[in-house]
Length: 414
Image 1 (spheres, rainbow, N blue to C red):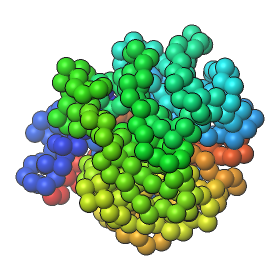
Image 2: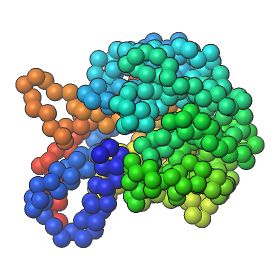
Image 3: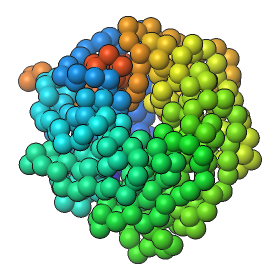
Image 4: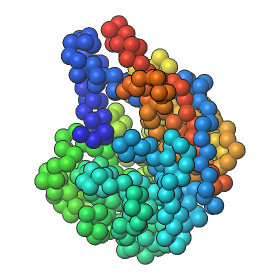
């Protein structure tokens, strides 16, 4: 069972039991473990802020770093990066060393993603990258070679995203040619081109995994053009709009207007925010949108430079119960800021940095242990990895952990 599917199932279970509050932990051993695995991912923002410190700097790129992604393959914890120096690089998080370099792009690499499709189907460690050279390429980390190339876009390719259904078989991409393209990774074919934006499509996202769909059941999802019943694509553009597209019908469903400049980042929500979209823009604002009504829910102001990336964080605010209510943004104003998603008041916390932030990623990593220590499923930590316009990648870690004992006491007290 994949980590993403497991998390979805756990969320349903926990939400039900927290609402009913009719149980005590310990009555089923497996349920104990599920609860611990789930709650261990809910970190307190104040604990992170008070204990966080810079632990790693990844050097090697010679130009602006545009994108990073992370993955855990077996026992290896890796990040990959794409840069204006036209290279894709892979780093071992535990050793801080670069372990692979791919340099066959002929222009800036704007986005990189680890491929879930190749891992789940072939146990291959593969990175997908999009570039201003008008191509999308797939790289085999172990064998140090290019596997596939998609070249149907007529101008540079910006953001890319894998489908949460069918094991990541499908990929969408936004481009300087004003289009969004949907690809079949298995066949290397372009399946559909979405037209409607009036300028560069900088960022794309695909709606989260649905609970009623089996992650690897291709028959259930093989409908329409590519097989994505109920799923949508979200896109942000230099034309100042955010658009929603139905994957099954390929129709445009909605247009969100409100940003005053180019949109650099869009993210679907999950759980209670399943019908919400988060966005960041050159107009220095972060906005939250309601997909059903088409209206803006919140606007967060405070940055003094372009907002390059927005993310839903794994943090909760002290004394709050439930899912994460904190969002995070990285900006050219050399700050990373945390916001309470329930209000449009000023930021909860500001991290002041020395470089302009181009991308950020939260990573739930295994805690490093000494040889004499025992590993535990609950010994996980949050690293915030961000990259800069000054060629560097940084990793910030916190020593804030949830332990089994704390979780049990909290639940039993109900």
